[in-house]
Length: 139
Image (tube, rainbow, N blue to C red; front, side):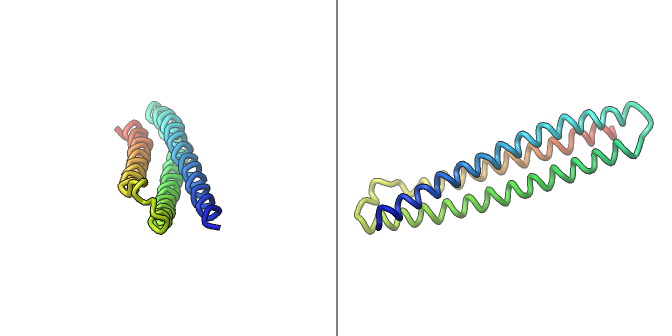
């Protein structure tokens, strides 16, 4: 029974890693695509008399950027908390079985740092995807 529980926990860790990867890659690609679109819309709006259409597109895509990044960060935080709990459970299981010395508990800190870096990358890309078109439009 213990082996099945261990396999289930490891499987959940692997699934969580895949899910986190999907969120990070999706948000990065979205931010880069929106940056390009917004920059184009802002350039077009800056080159000719202002129309409500271009500004509306710019505002909608900025709101979408904020929403996508907010949900991605929430998902990454949930993934980080899940990973932390699963690894803590695995460490407890390893301690009970007398094999905990083979697992470095500092991995919890390393995983936490990795999640914080993912979130920082998303925040920087989102800020750029919002700021650059606004600067192009209004400067």
